[in-house]
Image (cartoon, rainbow, N blue to C red):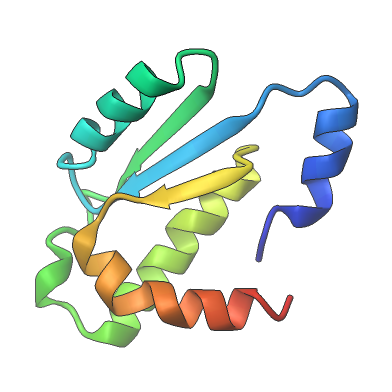
Length: 104
């Protein structure tokens, strides 16, 4: 459930860093725009989970499950780092993800 194992190998092979940005909708596009302006040489991958939006009406467990799946999808796509641009996902899932994924 993380990208730690592949990051060093990709870096050694000349892999360019990739940053994933996740939101439950399109609001995170402003985060993407700002990040691209500050880091023009970095590759970005944007994932919007509009199929399950809005997250605000969901339970904390549902938000956690959806957020974990989205973040894992970004890691599987080659991202080295993922930014949660979704306030609801950050508030409801981030701490638990750090606790669970940090043990992996």
